[in-house]
Length: 284
Image (tube, rainbow, N blue to C red; front, top):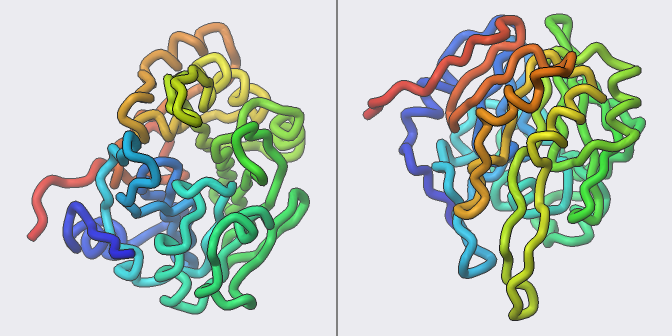
C-alpha cells in the first residue's frame, strides 16, 4: 500500500530530522505513536502512518505527518500490541530499511499479520522482563493488560536524563504497580478514550475500548507518573474524549503532577516538563 503524508516533506525535514537534540526529544505521530531522538539514537514506538480503512465506518482523524522512509535514521522500532494502528508492517517496514533496524513486538503481532517482507533477523519477539540497549537508551519490556489484544506489553525507556513509560492501550493492572516499584518514572503515555457503539457481526453493541478518565489517573498513580501525556483520545471519529477532564479526575491524587495535551507533530523534551513545542504552520 502507499502512504501519503498530509503535510508533505516539510515536517520531517525541518521539525523532526532538522533540529539539534540535547537529552531526549519526543515527537508525537498520532494514535500512540512516537519518534524519539537523542544525540546518539533514533527509535520509534507504535508508528502508524496509514489512512487505509479496514472497516467502512472507521477513519483516521489525526493527520499523517510524514512518510516513514523520510526519517534520516532509525535504530529500532518497538510496538506494544497486535492492533494495526500500533503494529502495521507498511508503516514500520520502510523505517527498518533506513539503517537495518529491528522491529520489537509481542509474538502475537508476527502471528496475526503478514510479516513475510520483514527479514527474520530483523524481527524480535519481546516478553516482559526483556531489556534492550539501543544507543544511549535502555528499553525495558514490562507487562500490561489489554483485554482487546492477543498480546500486549508496555515499555520503559531509561536515559541519563530520565525515565519514560509507554503504556500502549493497556489498562490498570498489577504490572503497572510493579513498574512503579521498579522505576522512578518522569514521563508517561497512557491511552485515553470513551465507550462506543460499534458494529459487530451485523449488530450494534456498546463496548468500552480504552481507559476512561479514572482509569488513566489510577494507572498514573500505580506507575508514579509525574508528567502525564494522554494519547489515543482523538484517534477515532466517534471516540474523542476530553483530556481536560483528567485534571479534575486527578484533583485528590498524588500523580500526575503535570498533564500535557498535545497535537500531532508536537515536540516534548524529557528534561523540560511543562514545555510543548508545537508544530509550526507553513512549510514549502
